[in-house]
Structure formats: structure tokens, C-alpha cells
Image (cartoon, rainbow over all chains, first blue to last red):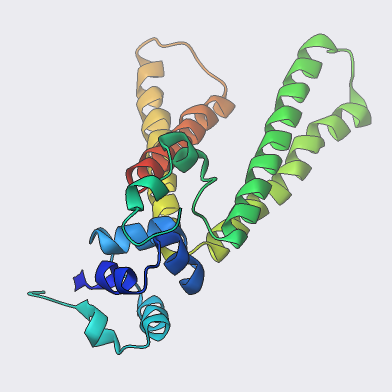
Length: 65
Length: 151
């Protein structure tokens, strides 16, 4: 699954640690999400969407799956 | 410095990742500290018991039973601290730990079953507690490797 986390984070000039703190997860989790090594659960996807004030589908793209 | 493109500078060193002391949530940091402390106390009590049983074999009866019970009693909060860490860890860290625990269980199972066969062809008999060594090492190494991979 693709996502726009890195772009959205850059637009707000947030570090991975900043986003991790806002979503109450570890920085490693944000890194794994950004590098596509891990797909978030639905609750975490909703939390991320709420932090960026965007709908989930504007952040996460299931791609060809 | 905080910034959007500084992920490499934010990256933990391999040993920070292995010890899980950088980048975790506050709850994870607190729970990891608790796991480290209780694991140390449990290990120390077990080692002290082994040394005491070798050096003071004359101690018998209720005192010996009481001493033998100490590591068992300490093991309860140790296991609870691991459970609390897993329950409160964020979902990705839980996945990392699951892989580590799976490696530990695998190493323990392979050792136990493998050595059972080796004993029948002449390998020296070992006490059952020896199985703890590959199990614990497998868990530690597995967790370290997975945590370092995602640092």
C-alpha cells in the first residue's frame, strides 16, 4: 500500500518524531509506514488522517492490491 | 534539529534500536525500563540461587524451599512487565516483538527436540533449565535484529 505520509509531513515541516508524537506511536512506526515496510491498522490510519485533517483515501492508496 | 527530511539524523544507532531506548512512545519507554529491571532482578535471583545451592548444600528443609521459591515469585512480575509492554506497545513495535518471541520459541523448540535426539546417540545429559539459554538468546537476538532493521 502506498501513502503520502512523507509529503504531508514535509508540507508541515514535521519530523518523523513530531508525527510519531502526534499519533502516539514510535518513530520507528512512522519510518516503517513511510518506507512501505508496514501497513497501518484501521485505527492508526484514522488517527493519521485526523492529524493531517484529510480523508484516509487522500493519504493511503491501496494501489494494485 | 527537527525537520521533515532529517530521517537519517533521527535514525537510532543499532544499539539504541536493540535496547529500544530511542524513538519509542513514553509508555513504551516506561514499560521497557520495567522489563529490563525485572529481567535483571529475576536473572540475578536465579544465579544467586544456583551459587547458593552449590556453596551451601547443607541448607535443607523449609529454608531451602523458601530460597528456591524466590526466583519463582520474582518471575511473576517479570512476566507481567513483558505482558504490559506488549499490551501497551504501538502496533508496529508489537509486530517487532512478536517476531523476536517467535525466534526465541523456535530456537528453544529446535534445541529441545534436537538435543533429545542427540542425547540418544551419546551427547551428555543436560538439565532441563539449559533450554532457557537458546530460548532467551533467540528472543533477545531476534528482537535486536528486527528492531535494528527498522531503526
